[in-house]
Length: 233
Picture 1 (tube, rainbow, N blue to C red):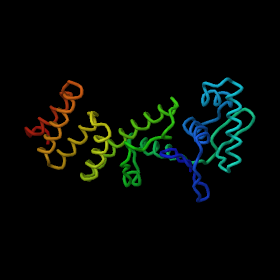
Picture 2 (cartoon, rainbow, N blue to C red):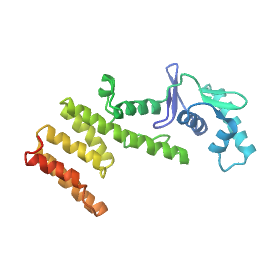
Picture 3 (cartoon, one colour):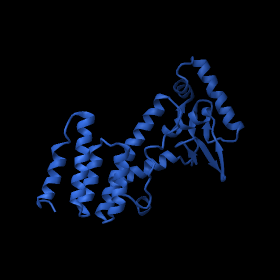
């Protein structure tokens, strides 16, 4: 198992090995870009400021250190690189979980697990490479979307406490995200707490006005007003 969330490490045979920055950069790139890649392209991507020969030399050195340190996990020949067959990656497992939620096809196991640290779970912390930053942003957005879907699944199943917890995680991570506020308000209304829903909307409206100088979308206010007038119950 390759761990790229938090300090990079690899679990092999029950033993955890912490990865150097060089190890983590190569393994991370191959994990986020499945398939085989030309060695020269990988080298120029990982060391963009080095010349072609120097970048290729850096790559050869890091691959040698991976083998020397017993980490492996990379399939390599004279021209192509890929992550080894069967290597599990924590980020990919999380991404797969999010995909099933977003597609509306979660398993019972998916619904039994609620990640609570999506605001602090960072891919390869301390790395500033552009491709790593893009993966961080992509994963966080997918996680936020998946947590909203998870909240709706719980709400439809009558599991209102779990629905609220999931929605609140998203609201705390991205307080201006209107879709998360809508999910939260819908849950309050579904469990029979319209006054709490009204208060939550008022707090969100004040926040949006203070931060952005605009009102929330009319649809959100109309949904709440319709319910409070008894038109949508």
